[in-house]
Length: 326
Image (cartoon, rainbow, N blue to C red; front, side, top):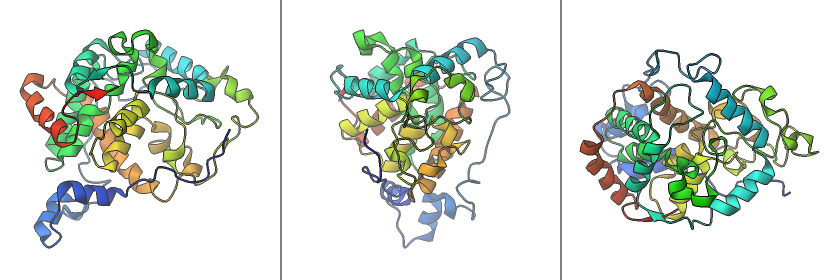
């Protein structure tokens, strides 16, 4: 197993991607303020749009993994995931899915397929995932009206969950433990900051491996978050689909999709020994996205048919207007 030492897929600095996507006129102070959170009344990105509802769709706190109304199915999904997500499984599944030979579908066709999926790892919501995609996108659209690529990220972020649906996956359909939920790196020791803690990993064969069971595992400190082999799921798959099909969303947005479920890192601050210089800025934008992903689940259901034309226009603008290879 090769040890990762340096970033092989360099992260474009998010501030550069942001400025390119909004075509900010640097000579106009007012334009700067409209396009940059840092230029809005002197607020930092962390403080900008600092909103947080108190209750989820069930009237409970968000991300309650102790006694939620969906506790049984959520806990079972995570325990199975933590016991079965290994280096070998990740390599085999990438080989199977990154050939992009499962068919050609449009973004809107894939969202319709998600009508058939309710996420078994989610304690906050039992609506079909297609509804959640539009909730997230519309919440971002309201808060970041001048960043249309960000709106599109909200729509796209969970489409990779089609991995669990036979309509797309066919005979290669995956169980939800291999598709949904918080992600974590394989090839190194798990962290107690993962949902349900270290106990949930008992029985994972990688814990008996002389390298995979160590803190750094196959990686070098400072190698960069983008170089970690994450547990396989919808985040990595959708990121790779977009790259394969020539999506022109700024790299900042693509990393939101790739790492939005890596809660042990961006929320609990585990695995920080692997961070590279570029990752602090990337994390800011991932966390900004996650406000909308998490807290929009209590929002009213959007008029999907009314907003579809807008999001189709964004697909066309960012190179995703037609059939894509999946």
